[in-house]
Length: 236
Image (cartoon, rainbow, N blue to C red):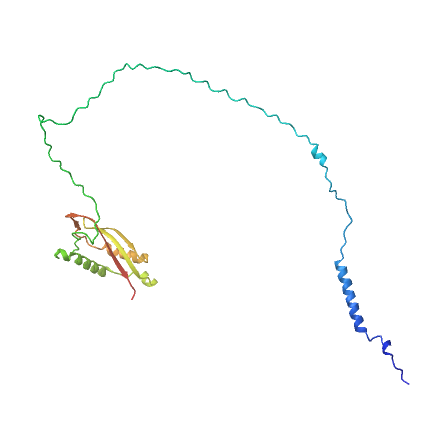
């Protein structure tokens, strides 16, 4: 005959529930143990303050020394001097400058005023007589300006030389050259503005080779004539 177990007497039936309850209790105890704080019962600090010691401190009395004010300045004596008006004053007599008919009038010779020559710059576009470039002497006056520009272009083309260092660097552009044709026909005050120093030096070299010219004239007198021209450097 086989014995049958009573289901109520089976101890392993709720083992999982017991395990979970025990695990929760252990975790709770562990958390309480970590969060448990203790404090020392040490109350040896003295927070009291004796106010009477500070109030009993004696403050030394300072005596204010009064400086007497300075004495007032002595009053000036009221002395009035009476000046007797006995001096004689000479009267100034103003004589008339008008001439009478009896007086002779002397004629003054005409005074010659020397005219001072001024260094005046007259632009090339408005000057009366433009500077004469060598080779344009026989041109008529109305064609002299065109001849000057044509000879200037020929001079630049004849003396033009592209700087090798500018070619290697691929530098190109336009250089604006400004100079002055002096009263003796020489070239001076040369200035350049361009994209590269090497191009500016080449433009200055070309201008330095310009020949001496017949100076420009304004009202029949030689004057300085500013002139500007662009020189274009372009790589092929």
